[in-house]
Length: 365
Image 1 (tube, one colour):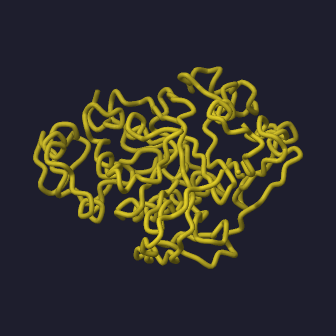
Image 2 (cartoon, rainbow, N blue to C red):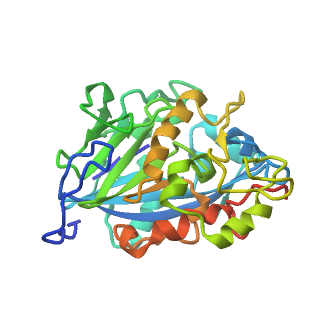
Image 3 (cartoon, helix red, strand yellow):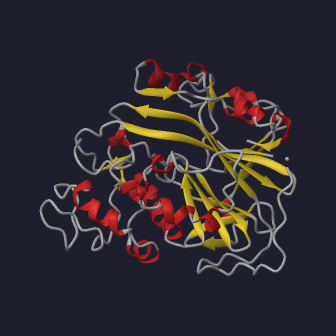
């Protein structure tokens, strides 16, 4: 689900060049948004890694994720993109509570996003759009037009509840009316000024959306939501390696941190993986019968499109559950807007293969 809503953004420096198309056809604009991130919880899905990615190596059967939630500010208004997870999951719809009572889903130190916002001095009444039951009715909900809006108890198997929509203004984004396309992704200019685009990235669920946030006139943050769940599904790829060469020490480490029994490249040899000659991503979207993705084929296509952003030096891609970033991304109250100037992307995009990083699950444990 997406929250949308109120904080004045810092003005753009005078004289800075307008954004070019970046080869994606993104219109130039000087309008920007401010993006800040919370880690609402860390979650372990026991024996469920196979529902997200393939292959799953022995000893890595559990899927471990952070739950990121993003506060975005535009022209004095605040809104949330992704909400993390509520701290009282047993009050979710019955179709979801079983995952928690069975021990399949284990939450570590969950924090309610509403509490985090209030602790940070941000009143909930200032959130203009977007657990919905804890936001005031003034908070709007923005969803994809194909989102399943059936609710419990009228529909026993529904994942949403009546309280999620009660008394709210619900805006459905219809991408059939979109007149913009970036790398094959239909886009809607949400505020009409080029600062924030909603992106049609179906597959995880019908109506699933990502976003492209302009944080300076020439740089962006792509909020990938649940388009993919491990950055190894998007990396390395040839253009990515060209624009972000793997550091020499990690090239050396990859020889043993990536098992040649499960992964290969033209210049690899048994027991020594060669990253430089790898021309495709390491993981793929799970297409098993119990896949977490409602439509794995469509999910993979959405992922392929978003991966072109990942290779661009002016776009920082952050998905909602990227464990490779958990200990390195700057959290609220820090802003992510200066990611380019600070070198954050260069510092983190290859960390997923580093042995000490929890995202490094490429050898049997």
